[in-house]
Amino acid sequence: MSNHVAIFCKRELRSYFDSPIAYIVITIFLLISGWFFFSDLFLANQASLRNLFGIIPFIFMFFIPAITMRLISEEKKSGTIEILLTLPVKDHQIILGKFLAGMILISVAVILTLVYTFTLSGLGNLDSGSVASGYLGLIFLGAAYLSIGIFTSSLTQNQIVAFIFSFLIIFVLYLLDNVLMFVPGFLISLFEYLSVNYHFSNISRGVIDSRDVIYYLSLIFLFLFLSVRALSSRKWR
Amino acid sequence: MITIKNLTKKYGNLKAVDDVTFDVHTGEILGFLGPNGAGKTTTVRIITCYMLPSSGRVEVDGFNAFDHSLEVRKKIGYLPENAPLYSEMNVLDYLHFIMGLRDIPKDRFNQRASEISEICGLEDVIHRNIGELSKGYKQRVGLAQAMVHDPEILILDEPTSGLDPNQIVEIRNLIKELGKEKTVILCTHILPEVEATCGRVLIINQGKIVADGSPAELQSSFQGKARIYLELRTPDVDVIAKLLKIKHVEKAEPISTDETDLKKFALECAQGVDPRENIFHKAVENKWIILELRKEQASLEDVFRQLTTS
Image (cartoon, rainbow over all chains, first blue to last red):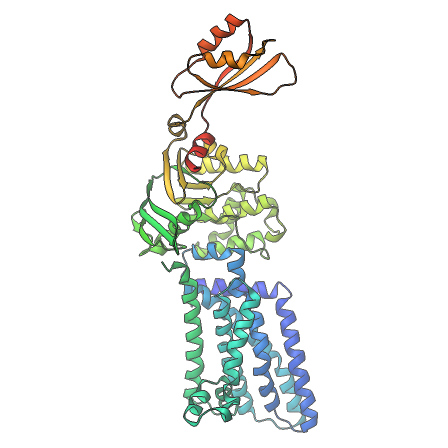
């Protein structure tokens, strides 16, 4: 990994963790996911993480735009982007550094939910294979949302606009496989393929298919690529 | 060092920079002057590879700024307008951050940071958060950031804005000092700054270069009227009429005073003629007592006003 990417990533992480942002969003994330998880757990009376993996993609819809909205729009607003882009660094290094910092923040949040998993494993038998693949799915899902968030943040100076746009894109991708019954037959497989949820539920069921992995990787790549393009748009003649 | 040829930048239909051509030589301190919105910042952003021009060419030390953008960026230290910095970082961390991105070896970080903070006068605030600093210190951090890799070219966009008079003098001296070995482009609309520091002045207006030369050259090329200041003591009431009869005096404007006998005038005459002797004779003839009689040099301000208005 390039040195520059590491430097950007480190700066971004420090700005998350030196300020209250990281602690606030992680705490809220854990409270909400914990509340949904435990309230369902005692109702269903079953040792399963299905609920947790069902609720986190939904919480991510708010959580991830909240941590990505400032990543580039703030630099645009304050003008610091002008110093960054006149340094001898490549545009994609900036985007990748910020992406990695976001990944680390999301991973911390996801790893902390292991507390629920361990609590549960004390209550009943857990299938460790499906737990592992569920967490892998969450990481893929988070990375995809993150790249969408970075993209919308690179489009505007306004953090709120960045938040709303990334939320909308994610919402549409999330909703696609919930509206299948309203969709004409020949479009069903397309909608299914485009839906983040469909692929997530495949992976979290414990079936790690290359198609699902490729879906996520291409989504991540596409939006990171668009972010780099948006950064370079200042150079359009 | 820097060659700019036929540079044009359009925003939609508006030409922010219009067919600009100039060279900057090594070791020159170039004052880049212009009213707000004249195209200074746009030109500078193109040289620093932040933007691409609509047409034209920029070469820095033989490297084309568009094909070898990274090479060009390595040679330039740039302080953008208003010194945009990360307010949540402390000064030392910020300098380390920039040094890392400038590929300065890690084992030289501490040495370089203390050198640069001494040059820019940052020792007292090195562990403070940038957000807590005064405007003057922020500007200095911006300057430190631009100089941290000891660049051959330094481009400063309004480096003294928001500083107090003492700080302005300090920064000007610093720029002069730097200009001995480096090429400096100083964007500003503060004229005394240019007179104090720059060996060469470039005036841009509405995207076009309207003047290029040393401050002295520009002053002598001034096309307007020469001004003469005259202060008299006399009870005479029709001084103006008499003054206007003097050869070459084209205009006489009274400046109000508190005393009735004390009269002050701003006279105008054509460039290149000197009616002062005639004024003296006229005064003797009318028994006016001359308290002051002086010809006023066309200032850079006059030149600037003439070239950038109308």
